[in-house]
Image (cartoon, rainbow, N blue to C red; front, side, top):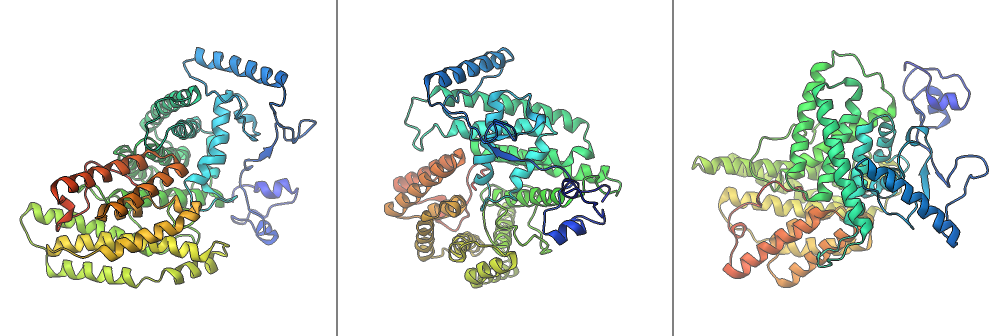
Length: 503
């Protein structure tokens, strides 16, 4: 540790600077911060007479004053080419009190608060004080590119919340139209600034740059979920190699525990995105962000992700995805699958079938000292396990050029999805299993269950990739109804046009 930690400095004690976390913080049971953390307070001020006070629209004078202030802000921002979000009666209860954002316009500060209160808990399984997405705010305060990306992400989600699942409502409130313009503007600003940074990459900006790329992928999920995420992922892969070549072996100046955890978190999310992004796309170069087999992930990594899928099931899905590419390569050369390839796939299916979700959930609770609902977490993992079995059986059927009876698994998966609807925290993670179930549905009743689940997912997340997923499924079902068969109904694979990220 190069300097005393912020926690010891704030306690006015001498830091031993021995390691991170330092011995004194560890002994006191405190989180060892190398920098001053963000502080979110209730009210408009952190101290003084206005501490704990909120802006309220309880009378006409206060409303008129707020509207006058908003109009002035709108005129100033519009003059610079930026549309301002109309937030007349939606002032945030919590405000970020930090001098580094005091120069931000009202709309941007609103979006920063929106990110903190809505986005951070949306893209993670369990929200907490240690939510890595909130840690990214610390980087954003010193990095304008990441800050613009956060604003774009929040504005896009806010704009999406004004739409309906069936998109039949043609009337959209002006505030959602303005939010859409904000999202486009700040995304353009982010892409431009990021392009300039990539021309002259700096090791000191590595964490903020990688975080910006990660959030651009989540922005793509909100916008559509097609293609864009893959471009960003490929760019992140290239940056990893570049930063490794620039790094002469010396450690980064910021080696605090929080910074290291953020790096692990970002790398983990890239791995998950690469794995699930490859499951439905055509053959492409394999991502270097593959699921690691070293078993060194943090015990809480599963709940610090946005899926809650057990590590072993992720590896099984990754294996079956690789088998799909192998099959495609064999077919291009007119070759048959070898007995070894078939045996390996059968063995992985057996291992996946024998995976004990209840035991895994219990072990996770003990190892992470978590208070999560073991039964619900077990149900979530079982949903991913069942979807992985359906996915793996499709690969095995293509290898053997035979059909497999999957009706029992489909019924089981739909029941698990239905059971989790009572827990919105876990249910929001189920797009991929729900889509896999939809690809295997053969009855109108099952298809309606899938569509209702998709609608609930949309209501919970406002991610447009969910609407697009439902459209893909409906096109498949119409094709089957008109022709009596589907390409994927034979000894084929789950494959959809272009590159979709359905998580």
